[in-house]
Image 1 (cartoon, one colour):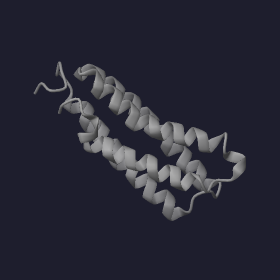
Image 2 (tube, helix red, strand yellow; image 1 turned 180 degrees about the vertical axis):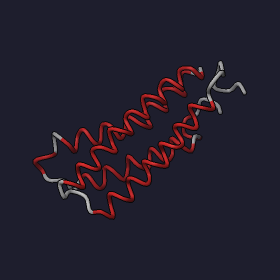
Image 3 (tube, rainbow, N blue to C red; image 1 turned 60 degrees about the horizontal axis):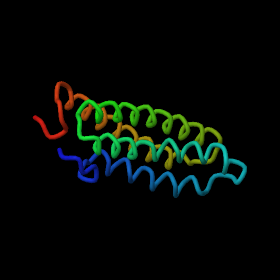
Image 4 (spheres, rainbow, N blue to C red; image 1 turned 45 degrees about the vertical axis):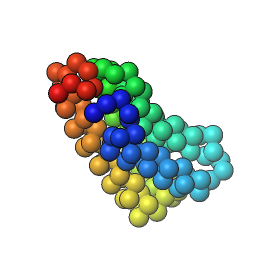
Length: 125
């Protein structure tokens, strides 16, 4: 697996989610600029950032721990997307597209966590 987080498909998908969330949240009302918009973006970029940090540490246990943190941030993103839809900030179509990305990333994070069980280093089999 190596320590280059950019090679991980889950990191790539999470990074794309951040880019998409930044684009869509730019349309949120100005009154949400320092509230929900900021919280949604923070939670979103926490996902790939934690994957990157875990990879950079070189130990499977650390990557597993930081991947768990990323999974928690993903849950936070999913809630803010639902809230944004319910408040009328996101269309149903926008919400469903982002939620599908979240579902895929969640499955990938769970798979990564399972694959790390019992490993000492990121490169060990």
